[in-house]
Length: 61
Image 1: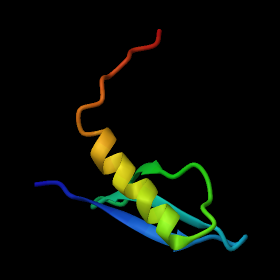
Image 2: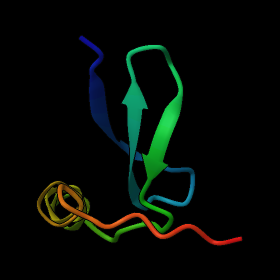
Image 3: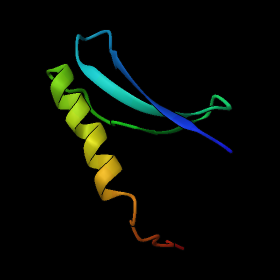
């Protein structure tokens, strides 16, 4: 079974970011912004876990 892992890290500007990495090394998603604290970045991760589980797919042509 495939697996993905959230990685929480500090960028060069001292902001906290997250990325979701598949076990094959591909980045599936990222925070798209830096957070001032590690806690806020963790909250961003939890928001994705909670709100995206049943997200609709919209096809744009």
